[in-house]
Amino acid sequence: MNRVDNLLEDLRLHRGTLFPIVTRLRAMALASGPAITEEVKYGGILFASRTGFCGVFVYTNHVTLEFGDGSTLPDPHGVLAGKGKLRRHIRIDSEHDLEAKKVGDYINAARARSDAV
Image (tube, rainbow, N blue to C red):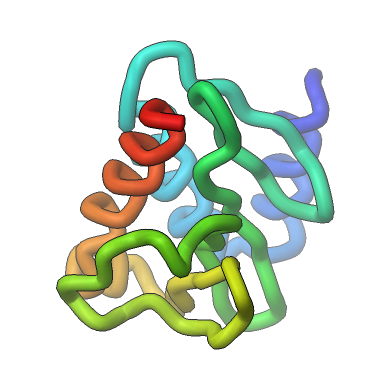
């Protein structure tokens, strides 16, 4: 098993209710373009195309989808949170939030921005 598989197995065993959210976010990130890579770093899964574009992190009762350059992303649905200089995130409490918060739009926008760098 590689580090991503190990982390996913740990989440499945210890954060079972959040595991489906993580696996759907992972699938969305990996499907957002060709040659997407993933690695475990900072306790989550980071995704990259030409450069890093997002990360998935699990907390006790929710998951966050984080964008290192999130302040540069458009926010047409008003779901990006955070007031830092660059970072923004989307808090996801249930699988329903994936569609309701249009998470795929943000993943695709971040990946496209990564490819443009």
